Image 1 (cartoon, helix red, strand yellow):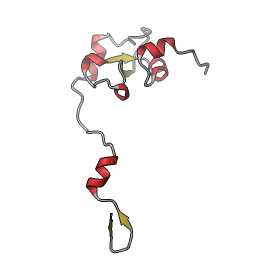
Image 2 (spheres, rainbow, N blue to C red; image 1 turned 180 degrees about the horizontal axis):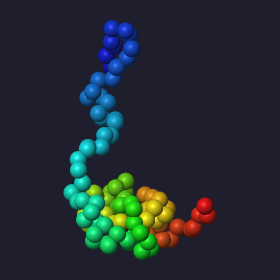
Image 3 (spheres, helix red, strand yellow; image 1 turned 135 degrees about the vertical axis):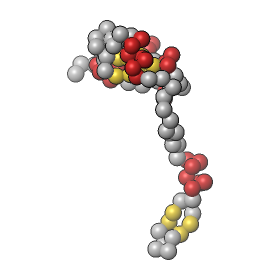
Image 4 (tube, rainbow, N blue to C red; image 1 turned 60 degrees about the vertical axis):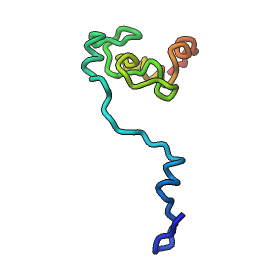
Amino acid sequence: MTFSRSGARRVQADFASAYVRTRRCRSAPYKRSEVFARWNGRCCYCDAPAEHLDHVQPISRGGRDILSNVVPACADCNLSKGALTLTEWVTAPLVPR
C-alpha cells in the first residue's frame, strides 16, 4: 500500500489486479442479426418471438462467447433460465410469479 499526500491509502495496481477480476471488453465473434436469422427470430426454447440472446452453456459455468453457444430466446425463457444449464433449467421446479 502506498499513501497519498492527503494520507489516504491507495492500493497498488499490481496488488489489486491479483484480486479484482476484470472483464475484457471486446466485440463478440458473431452478430446479433446472424443469430436471429439462423432461428427466424423465434425463441429456441418455446418458439415465441425472441428479443434476447442466451448462452446455452452460461459463461459463468465455463461456456464460451461463441456463435455455437448463443441462441435467441424470449424474455420469459431467458430470464427464467438465468445462469442454469439446460438440464438444471428443465428439471427445476416452476416458481409462480
